[in-house]
Amino acid sequence: MTDIDRILDAAPVIPVLVIEREEDAVPIARALVAGGLRVLEVTLRTPAALGAIRAMKQVEGAIVGAGTVLNARQYEQAVEAGSEFVVSPGFTSAVGDAAARSGVPLLPGVADAGDIMRVLDFGITRMKFFPAVVSGGVPGLKAFSSVFGGVRFCPTGGITLENAPEWLALPSVACVGGTWLVPSGVDVDEAAITERARVAAGLKR
Image (cartoon, rainbow, N blue to C red; front, side, top):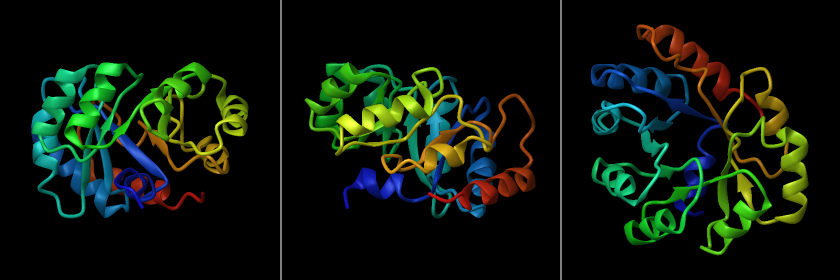
């Protein structure tokens, strides 16, 4: 099993996190891991993100990566912060080269057949289908999967607790990414996060 497969297979849902305050990082990670979600994607959308990645790595059992990585410099920053994987919303050759240099696995975003083919040219067969709901939804991914048989996907974007089971039922779907587990802009409630994580970790695939 490759490192990226180990990460994708760890749980049915990867929490996609927007962390505004670095001091919230450890409580959030602790709560998610306690609920059974060990793989945590911290998006590089805030100034606190890289510090949050460093802090979360202190939580036993957490597998911490960086999301919303847009270029090679951010890839390098994410790796320097200790990211165990990197997620990008799209794909460029510069990001692909950064992944190859670092050895830290990349989950690149794809939205159509051309995207998938460009990623495959780099030897990458694990991809983020994004934005999932507006890029054809479940029917669209079914169509792509019939053509690209060796590819496994992590649909993200518009995924909710309610529609996640429909995505997870697809053979080509390894897991889904979700933002509902830790709502941004509200105080951290560890008990509530842990409960949402327990429910998500129990989803069948």
